[in-house]
Amino acid sequence: MKTLLIVDVQNDFIPGGSLEVPSSDRVIQLINSIQEHFDLVVATQDWHPKNHISFASGHPGKKAFDKIDQDGNEQTLWPDHCVRGSRGAMFHPELETDKIAAIFRKGMNPAVDSYSGFYDNMHQISTGLSGYLRDKGASDLYFCGIAGDICVYHSINDAIGEGFRATLIEDASAPLDKETFEVQKKELKEKGVRIINSREI
View 1 (tube, rainbow, N blue to C red):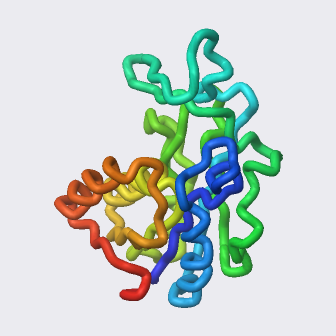
View 2: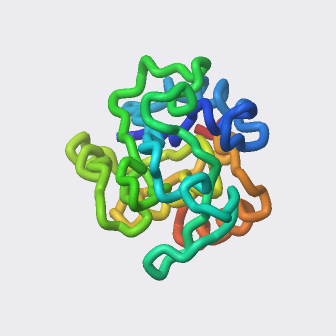
View 3: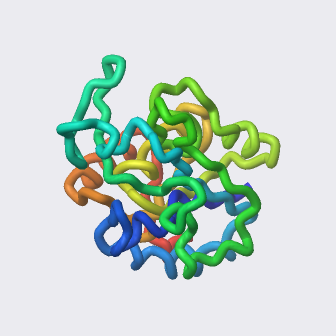
């Protein structure tokens, strides 16, 4: 089953949001235009409590994009974003959601950050996405959304780890850092991930 995973197309990641990703608004219409080519469409959504560990506001003396050590792992501190129930956490109003069969929320544990749509960053908590996809008979996954170098990238890596085939739709994914994304795309190709343009679907 040909499946599209739309990652975190939420107001806080769009220009003007609290954690805006440059030019991320350009991917919305592309994502809308490709949904009809898929048998199954699912989406992920950052859904943080107000006291989330990743928020710089909760670490006195620290600022957004600083790094801290969290249980032996590096944690980037972010501006407060996608606080559950807030406008910033909602899907962008221009995103067409009629075809989205299921939404998987992540980052709900205040003590652990969560980039991937499959697991938190410590791989302690599953969102249930993998089991859902297997139950649906989905094996061929296509990824798009925001941010390409963070949540899309980590979702693809976990998909590979779970045994799915993965394809990145490059022009329908907006990175926070373009240089990092270029390095990641080479790495993903080496792992067998296909990288395509939306016109190739």
